[in-house]
Length: 249
Image (cartoon, rainbow, N blue to C red):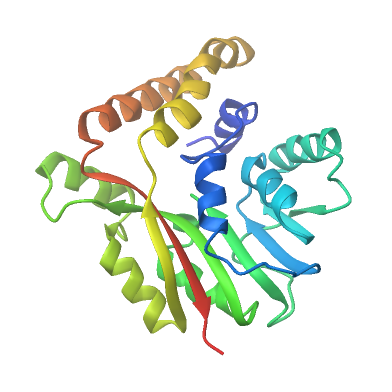
């Protein structure tokens, strides 16, 4: 897949994965930030920064917004300036498996819909070193909602992301890697349809125009349409789980 095409398709969208401000705030409500004024937070795989803005508006401290795409980070920077938050948010163009933070330096690591790039367990293990003892990890991760699924659905997701698993599987990963689970919940369908898929759908025409309706661009749009139809058909079997856990110590 052409990475530049993916960036161009998603760059004008508020989110690059399922989620909503309401769900970000719900996750944040399980983290003890009372009277904490100098929090050190990393938002990893931040995209264009919808959740970054939410964190900045509802916490006190500094947020490092990490993404590999300079295009996404520029969009985030513009948003931060518009909301007078640029002094609180530091964009960082960096791979999520090569982070520059000092060990035990962060109070919160946040990642919505991005940890799958590393793999859930690998991401939990690697990012853990940067959290202070007692620090929080808050991540959303694709998860099964039922113990049995249609074969075509299971085949699709196992090929796309072999680490997909039940909520209980994700909690076990957290527990065996030095975390105490604090809370978890499932993202509702509106996080997929209204907040993620609809903005993509509305941008198809302008994207294809920018790309002069190239074969690759047309294939990408068709793939996105297929994914949307797939979710509409099978949404009762899978979604993103949001997992909040506290590092031992």
